[in-house]
Amino acid sequence: MLDLDRFIVELDRLITTVHFYDEVYCNNEGVNAISSLSLEAAKIIQLSVHNDIVLSTARLLFDGKGFESSGTTYENLSLYNLVCNYEEHIDQELHEQRNKISQLKQKINVKEYRNLVIAHNNKATITGQNPAPKHQIGTEILLDLLRESRSLLFGIRLKVAKENGETSLPVTDGNVHRCGVGRKFVQRIKKI
Image 1 (cartoon, rainbow, N blue to C red):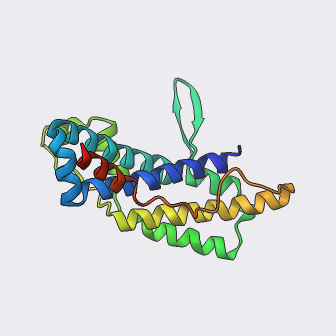
Image 2: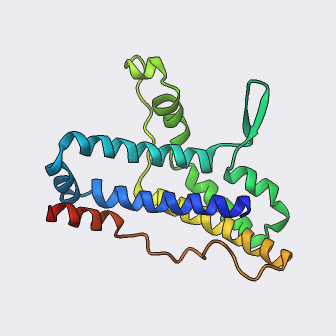
């Protein structure tokens, strides 16, 4: 499995997670159903899924080259690195997708939110001395960003496969039914 394949699998997982969150926590039926079992559990699950979406989005789409820790440099599995590593496979159509992704990324503030609220436990933000940044993540914008990113990487992956003479891929073209995961969950809860 190439780094491209692993990245696409991660994007697919994240897209499904966003659909789940939207179907369970962004409508009254879902909130009422899950809260009827345990309000505390519903809040824990909501925060966990929310934070996974924010952290995964930041890690996959907003982080750059890598980071250094204890003298060792680590490379991120990020959109930035993959596009840099496979730049020779980016034609005009894929370049236009890249521009669209850049425009979508400007609409959300996920990296600052991740850094100050979730990942680094910023004291001034947590104690209320500084206002917490808003991530401005809407379901529609986030799904557009994830789909465009997936499409870009899949386009690159197809070119790599052709170049390598591969006849099958470990990832699909993205025509996967992801909607309904949360709705099925809510329906099963309501039957309890």
